[in-house]
Image (cartoon, rainbow, N blue to C red; front, side):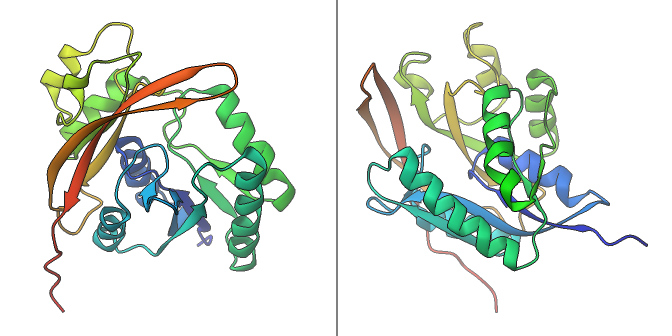
Length: 237
């Protein structure tokens, strides 16, 4: 019997990551042994999603899969990010990892970037959800018993009222036609707190919804963040 490829998963904490990991764990080709997440070390929150790292750690415990973080500065440059990523990938390569998995669905430029960054290390990329219909994926996510909450919204795409909503069929129906149902264009981000990849649900309460604006040399973008407050884990020893 052929050995499975030792694989690490680039874990975002959201629904697409959860569904992609679900499929990988069922795979006969891959052995997922590590979850890797980028976090803002200044705020101790998951990059882009704004999720508190305590909830990330509870997710990792609930999956039973080892994990680690890439600790990014408050406002990392592309050079800083790529340097830290190379250092991390080098360590994973030394530990015998041969494949890296992602939850991307249809962003060609992002896929090409990931492949380009990992090619020098001889790491093979894996995209379990690639080119699948996003409407089918979101219904599969719900049908499998996964649960997720919207924690970040691009204010140019959706109003504040979508922040803090649970991903369900009414959420899908309420989305404007211009918004991808999986938020693949960055319209929204989620936190997955229950489902078949977890040994137990992650418990939390919803906190404040805040608006933050981020500026680049050419543009400004606003985002609504729904803060989630972790509850203590009740782990049986």
